[in-house]
Length: 202
Image (cartoon, rainbow, N blue to C red):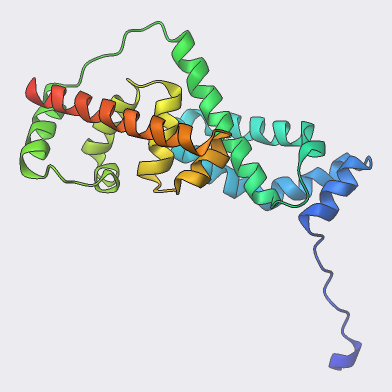
């Protein structure tokens, strides 16, 4: 077939167009946004929530986004707005989790303490990213994060594990920059003390 007769491929509507359609009453158009950002939202939640909660939290994120579409500022990127909803949904999950937890936190296993003692002795400057990449070390880090408040946990994950700029972490959490700075400093000191204390107990 001659190229001149080929029909142009349809152009996908941008996020603002889709949002306007939804707000105008075409609620089914929201499925376009869900399809477009599903993997993006899942990736965020996987970094901040237990594996068995990821799907449910992702659904919650899109429900919240749908209900608050009218509050999205057109001057900002829809993707960034959705990311902040995802992060805050994870934060809310941990707040609820800690409030309803009845089983006392268990201590580290002897094997974990031995590993931690070696790590503290051999590599006191091991980066948080290096720790997160090692299975045994990640288990220890998860245990330590579980000792902190939901706020401390989220700010540590964003600023130190994901290495996001403080300004970006503040935007995602809906906090002030100064609050993130203070929180991250105090939270890192808390978790370092926890790890040092457990290491000495080995």
